[in-house]
Amino acid sequence: MASYSAMVSTIGARFAYSPSMDVPKKRQPMPSLASAPYRRRDSALVVMAVAINQEIRKNEDKVVDSVVVSELSKPLTAYCRCWKSGTFPLCDGSHVKHNKATGDNVGPLLVKK
Image (cartoon, rainbow, N blue to C red):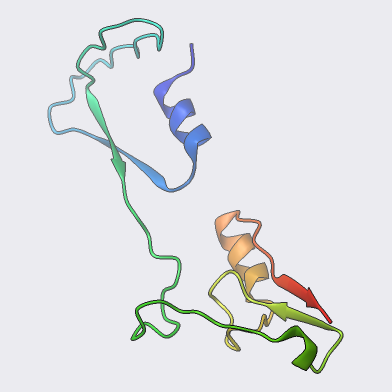
């Protein structure tokens, strides 16, 4: 049986674990996923939505860019997918710092002419 904290870390980094205010001193074991009905848990799983785009064109309802491939000046153009680029929508390599800080693996969209 997997522990609750192991299941949270398996689900992903966007989940936050927060004990409830009435947590007993001794933690109770997590019930088996196969057992039903579930007993009241002594903790809470809090899911927080985090905006990916923190600062780029926030005054627009939706950020949409179109590219006509035949009009590209270079044979290979990199477009940002991490929302951290200072030259958005073009990639400036900011995803490298983002990936190191978050453990993410995002990279650019490469468009070939």
